[in-house]
Image (cartoon, rainbow, N blue to C red; front, side, top):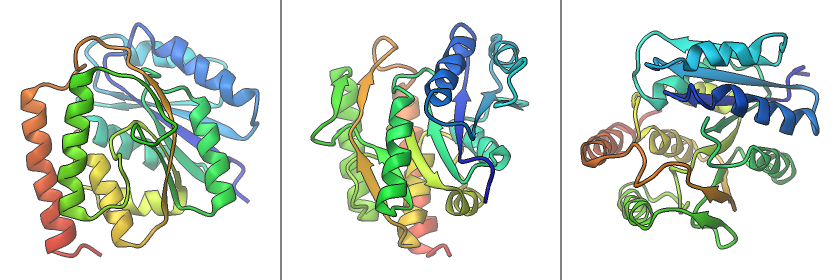
Length: 242
């Protein structure tokens, strides 16, 4: 048996003001419910003191592991590094800003163990979800969902929400096939999983948006996301990735 039940991977970019506090919040959440876990913080080449403060959170706490990307390549690349370092039987993704409470990772862990699903993903569009989310972001999210549904025939309503739980044996293999480093990496993970007929289930979530406007996503990012998604379609659907 794997001595570590679950690894929670926190990709972080320029989160220096909050990362130490947020890592401790995740630790307290899991420490109260589970003994055999680890938190893998991945600094994605931040320009501020994210790495320094993440290391402070790891002082005298063997359950916190810090990984540093030498340069900023994007969230997808950070998660690849986190998955590579993770040792858990299950691996979870959680955004380091904690727009989503770490309690939902615990909920997802229960779901994946009880249901036999291979992947559990948080969904903004689940009927029981609660959103404090900018209207513009909702429009972008729904438009992207429609786009990928046409391309990939995925039976899920949301691919982008930043809380997901995977069986380690699958996500470690999938991540070796993922080529996308930035915003579209989620769809590549799920498209490959769907190609391998893995069972994906959605769970409700409460999202409290922490940033003003539409956050870090701009028009250029949306365009890059579309281009990356078309590249994923070519690799996964047309080339029929194995």
